[in-house]
Length: 125
Image (cartoon, rainbow, N blue to C red):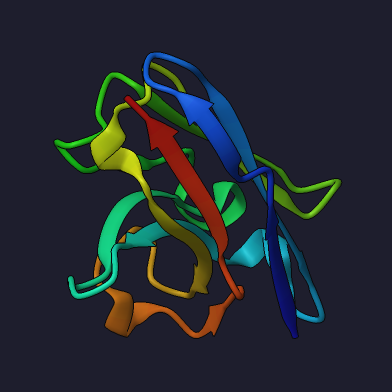
């Protein structure tokens, strides 16, 4: 089982990035995929997730801190989930993780079985 994030980097405030999460070794289309982020010294925050389309329909969740700026989508043919991040702010700086869950839609990291290693996003002011 493997999840790998990519697309992180350094961007100026107001800019955009698109993160990708590629999964393998498990039935990707049957899992909800969530995005979390963590700043050193703080708890990991669940910011978005997308349900298994086949099992639960196209359900999405956004944390209030990112709603209206971030968009999650999935391509089950490519075993990939995307997080389009627009209007980035310095407070979005964090390590971003994707994770897979059998729960339909959850921001609780306890509900997630598989995790990627993370990708750094840095937003400069």
